[in-house]
Length: 91
Image 1 (cartoon, rainbow, N blue to C red):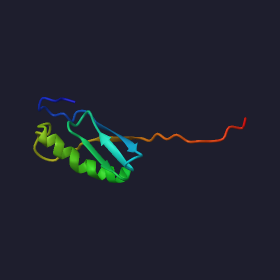
Image 2: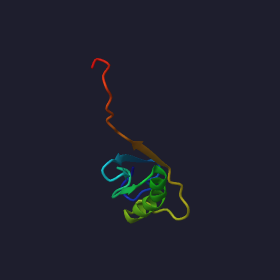
Image 3: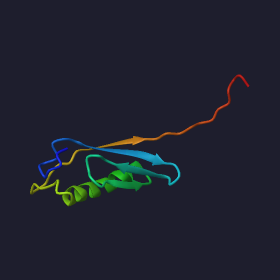
Image 4: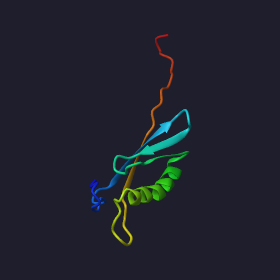
């Protein structure tokens, strides 16, 4: 991403999310959007929040300088890790 006020949307925005088991929410952040950190109880709600927060942050950081409507391609990647317990057949 270009960070100097030029049109930074020449590349898709990659947002990574992980499941916080303790808080029971998806937590999202992105290296492509300075200051982005948000959470939601489902991936669908997370995407709804991102549609609002990402343009606001891009404008606040001076990265959205072009007038008119701009398409912002977002790739939301979720990661869920869990440990499961099972009995070994050798017991």
